[in-house]
Image (tube, helix red, strand yellow):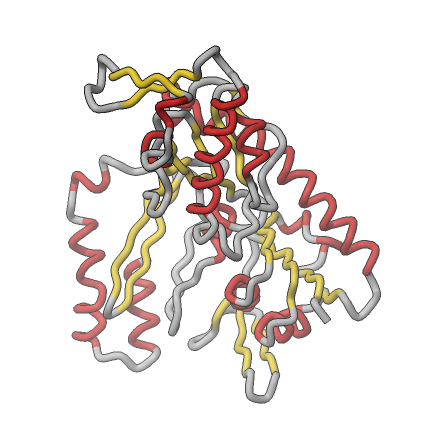
Length: 337
């Protein structure tokens, strides 16, 4: 594949020595035995004069080498597109953590402007009247709080104020996002957070129990069990919506129409096959497309181009198998106008 990349670079007019220097980081990676001993199902490498990134990923890819003026992203869309990204908010009185995940993995997000525990949230309030503070034996500086009378109204109000601060701190993180949010926490905390919440995509079901006792893998497994039916329902609803609009000016199902609509910010939802490529050239100035049966020098995958502009312009992309594209077309889209 590196040889293919070099051949394509030379065909585009790059000097042989420049091509070798550009590809040198990949050769050095290939020679690293430790790198090859820590692989997963798939490997994605992105290289430019100013960037070199590689990702070992838990999905398999068909082999593909693309040389162009931007990175080819479509094989990765199944990790981050409309049918697979969610957040988990792990709540307790002593700790707040946020995670982002897909069906394949879950990663913790570093929080800023969010209180990490109830003591931090209410440290300037007259908390002592309602709560007794005990120092945790396992972590000497961790405050553990117990409401007087166990679950009394004052304690609930303190939790509500605490969660409102958490919710307010998360607002900037969730701005312009539509990813579902799943709560994890002991059962009596979850309805209180729902009362404080203003994020429109908080799911009604959550993970009950103390999240501090769960490993990252256990948390991910339980979260995906909640998220998957949500994604299946959302995708099914979107397909039904497409079928209702089918034949109107609000849908498109040809490469020419969809690529143009995506470029000019008209695509609301895109269904793109993950297992197909369509090589060609799009000219936005003339709004024209050339499609080639085989990849030619200077071509790009037009399906990838449509997906890129749909995401960039705030649309939703469903990366699906070819047979799952509505009407069994090469591509399909719901248009904004």
